[in-house]
Image (cartoon, rainbow, N blue to C red; front, side, top):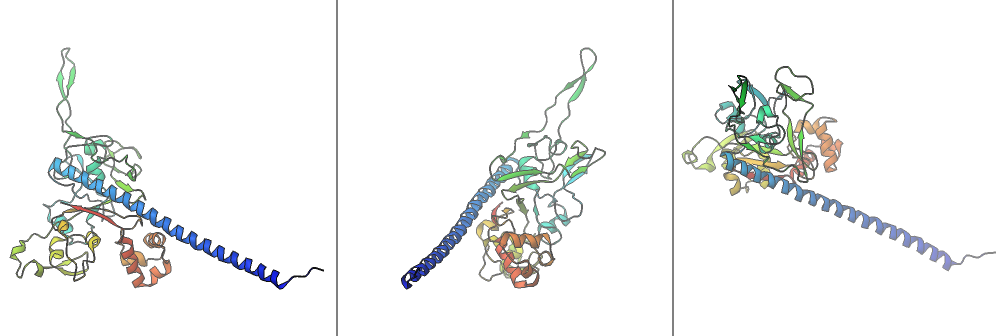
Length: 363
């Protein structure tokens, strides 16, 4: 007969307890390692995205030095039909917001909430030349001289003169200067997206064919997560700050970005709220607009590692099974149920979404 002593039982129980503790420690270490890995990955993505946005800002500065103005804002948001390419005098040109058109200036000053003051198309149009030759003068990347109105200089057709044998001879004429892309899209962490499936038909043209009658219009520069980089433009109010009774701090305006009246430089400069929020809470009494924003007129914004800009409105997050609701829940690890039912939770989600936005401003 085999006898099991108390010492043996205690030893066996102690071994099992040790095993459980060891397993628990392993799980804790794995959890810490996973969190550290995710944090390191997020940080690496943030650094790469910041380098991308900074590189795009340098390219915008190069554009400005060459042409004397920064890229205009293309009209690629706010309508059911895409109107980013229009035909003027039989020539297809980018449709851009113009400071000489009152209705456009209302939008650029943030007075019309139907049209956001950013474009996904402006940077690839004017830094890359990602349009077709009938628009920007060059097939593939590259473009010809850009005019202040947003159009590209027309390509000069060759002259035809009589040849020695009586037949016509083409004589090349000097055309507008041609430019290579101002930003290298072969760099890691950026994708040049050109939609060749959904094209604009100007007249005739067979489906799926990009020709002089069928043109690509949707082009985006996307970060490593596949999110389009935004280009923001804005204008300050057309008043003399010195003429404001009580000084600029007393100036007030109704800003659609805030859905309430704001005052001081925030009201006067009309910087989009998403750009302001990269510097703090603009509605806080302690918030001051930093110096680099006071003379700025554009911003380049990337969504950062969480792939969200943090400008979703209440309706988008309330809508059951909406794409925006799904993206917030997935990318931030949130509860879909609480997003749909808890207003405070939604507000916190939007704040978390924009925490890692990457913003570069310039004039």
